[in-house]
Length: 528
Image (cartoon, rainbow, N blue to C red):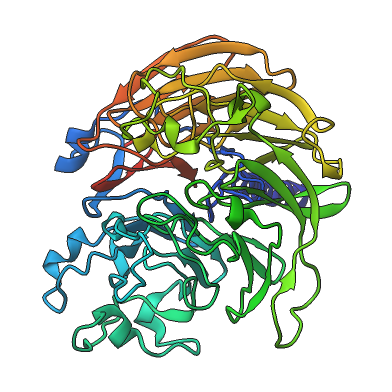
């Protein structure tokens, strides 16, 4: 009996450990998983917190807070005890080896304490062809790092894809790339490396190697599937917004995740139809037993490609991805008026000839910036534009991904046009879908039918989506972090002002809520 009781206790403890491991989880990439649904299984997350107490170190539910810079547009990720975030380079003032390079950084912190572990300085890209309009490098690294094992994959503000060592140079200089000293210094004199510098394993240049001509800034969070990495190229228009600089360049490419070798590309001609730039982050999901890669095009069309399988082939020209289907997210009345095509930039309120009154009523074409989400064998995605273009009519689509060919009509399950232009990615849980628009409205709909449940007006510019976790919906706007109760009726639990604007989406990992404002990274728990 004593032995049975002993093994019963052991079994109970093991069950508790396993259960705890199943509940607490990392958030290793944008969206948390390949399907990109912004939902976490974390529990006991805060309904509010006190930033002032957090900054003073006196609690207020704040585990730690760290200064990151002056511009943070990407979302943090968490894996294996480390927190990663892309920022600008404003925090270099404490590093006498470097001057501000205006190219951004990738920063890594200890998950428990917030201690800075390493940073990779991204030098400003110079010597570019004059036709490339790439003047927003000061925004820094806008993508969310994707972590798998000891590899950290990120698209930088210098228009490159990097594979980094998760431990930085603290465990030596790994990988074939050995030129970090000159890379970090940019065009300056090579610096003496330190264990707190980042370690580049391999580097792929989107401009020189893929032929992309990015517009404004490179922005994409990569997705991994098997041995392959998928990323948009940020290819776009020239400075006057009159033509695509590289219409034959790919909008999405595939790299060997181990070596960075260019393996495949889309050949749909997306770049030739771009209105502004290709910024959408791709997603991956299983449809009918086959892995598909979903990409929102800068031409306003949603695409599904067959994911590559097997080991990468030998050297040679990049292969063509096989297109499974395409779905036009701009209905005819968004593309045409009185039988004539509506100019995309008529919807840019900054243009003198624009008819957009910035009231949300302008109807015209939009691209796809938010990430497509696969949920219960359906794809959800919204259309939108650069927030600088002003407000305008958006549209949310629910699409059947089991079709083939042009599925604009056959694949449409439902649409919702009650929202403004949106750059957000949807989040779905408990049968309810949440999506924000640039105007600052949070919409809650029935995910199956598209029926509207409620709309909350924050009246503040909003770029990111809502994180669903612990029965709450966390939404960042330019002014506040809002916390709602999930459900078919509006219930605001609280709102928190963090001292600087917030353009990111919150994440949750291992019982902690992370929020990246422009200047600080916050780690908040339910208890001090």
